[in-house]
Length: 101
Figure 1 (cartoon, rainbow, N blue to C red):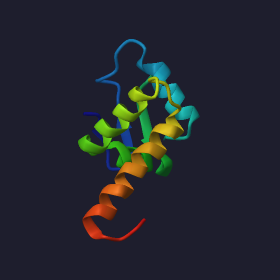
Figure 2: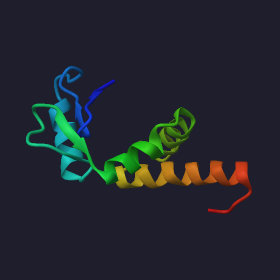
Figure 3: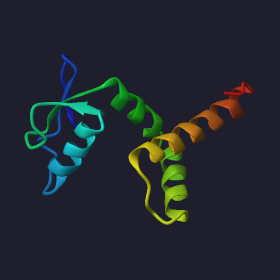
Figure 4: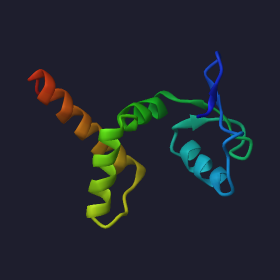
């Protein structure tokens, strides 16, 4: 798990593997994280990034989201993945509370 600092920055550098800098670059380009360089692994998670993380952090929601993408061919944009996860999250909350979201 990345180290988080009091100032809101997250250090991914200790967990980075070959090819991770490109994924971090894509996340930075999508506005999910902010940082100086995608190669150093030191980023601030933006509000949009936190919303994405909150949508996919539940293992059951993530597994449903991955299954839906896999069943439809295995390709999806980050925004589609986020919308799917949020949809499953809303459905789960609605089922537990009886409140339609």
